[in-house]
Image (cartoon, rainbow, N blue to C red; front, side, top):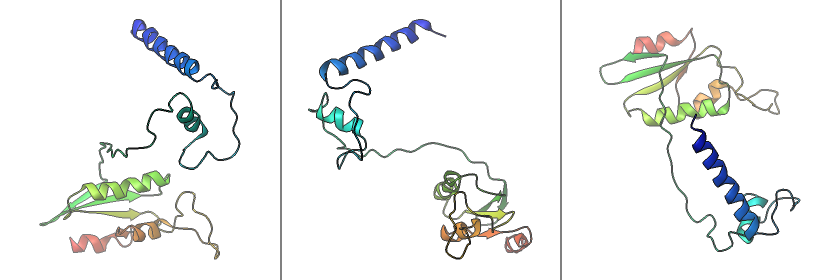
Length: 165
């Protein structure tokens, strides 16, 4: 470990905190306690305090910057047809909603002629954190797939896809 770098970066951090405290004498950690939501347009009371204090001459929330995260995906199975590739994702359950969202992003990144389909262990499995509806049921994996435009199969119905290919 490069201790010289660690010490220098910590010193820079301490100097920055010192400058903020010097220029905004009303701000010290925990000294200003606000109750309720911050004023309209601010994400937090901390941002509001900075914008009305030490950063009052700075513009606030003026830009929206798009960004992408480069990730990789390894499909569980694939079927190569004459015209396209069908990627099959075998799913017992989604661990969280972020995992489910990942597959929407994956579909957007593959070629238009290719397709991502799901092979659910049990399509009636409730989605993570799904609330009970008035009728006592929960939002299921199959309903999620239908809502997001994915074809889905079970071990009993996957032969339909295999025959189609």
